Image (tube, rainbow over all chains, first blue to last red; front, top):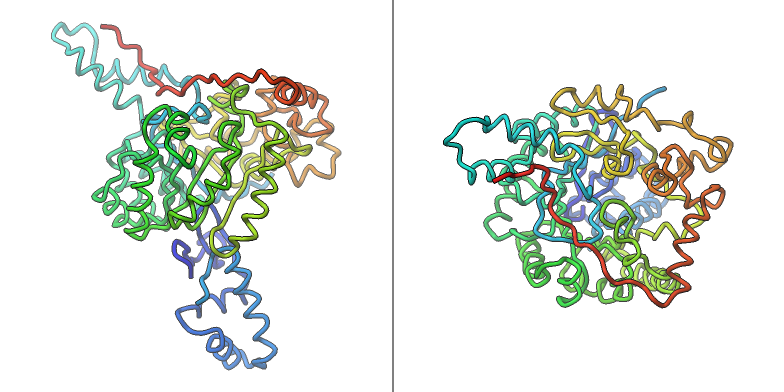
Length: 81
Length: 399
């Protein structure tokens, strides 16, 4: 997660939201599943963890994970190292 | 009508400010002067012969009828219950209030994301630590330009060098930094240098907002409105910079709406997402509404709770939804996209807040905007003279 970005539950809707300067993004279930695992792990580790937990093919998942994270990276909400 | 929940509260905690920017969106005069005056009279009853003039002056000018710490804390907790997720502490200069850290702490306890919108004047290491420890999430630091001479001329005081120092301190202490620059005719040609400055200072985000004409900016419009040539050049520059810095600095560019043909979706609709509480506790659907729409009957947090004001008040319901819209908005397919534009702009330019925003090409008042643009783009004799913002002093002090 980029500096200054907070992941939080919106108590009005019960949904997960990202809060950042002057902005709020409501996360869908898949984006939240990915983001909540962004704790220093590599892209591959996150993909494998998700594939195992939800019993999905790793190869099918890899592109989606990359796309979600690069979208959030473009918006300065996550930092990929 | 179903009433949505608000997402963000702008807390204008004081109108006091050490800067004098001629585009300030604060009211040129403070409408609720009478209440501040009444408060001052109440605090120091007249007729007492030993009254201290110096003290009376001090009380009147330091408080100006501003909400107390406890009143702000109540507003913050009521806002959180209403659904607000973000709070911006603004002003005036919010650092002018010594209880700022306490208010930030209260906002964090209510799980709000806290932004400080500041000139940076008065922000030293001790104060920064105090704000960080209170849980401040992010700082938006204003700049007037990229270099002292012009920046200080715009601010009406020597501030630029201090801001550079403050920016470095903010980064050193680890609070995310946004640079906010209001763009106008005198500084629009320096956009590339401003973006370079943001990069050099390690900002995460830069907001380059073309001046919108309310408050002091409306009064100083002739000296602030850029030319079409400047606007076109700026658009290209920003597009290129955005591409170059994608993923590094988030560049947020606010267009100069007089040059657009469709109005901005102001506030994402009246009473839909935002509310503002001003220093004396008036609750506004939009920060500029008190001066632009003088017949709007404002409610105050001292007499009503925020929930009632948001849901039930005449001021928040007046332009909520689409029923209030006249033609051409009422039958326009764009009405759910731009919400008829800006109510304050309609009021200032046409005299009626319910009219279509005259920026819209379908507005019967578009000619008023075109006339302003014609003046600036055909004449070489542009005025560079503006009136600097002064701090509102609603309390007449008789000595």
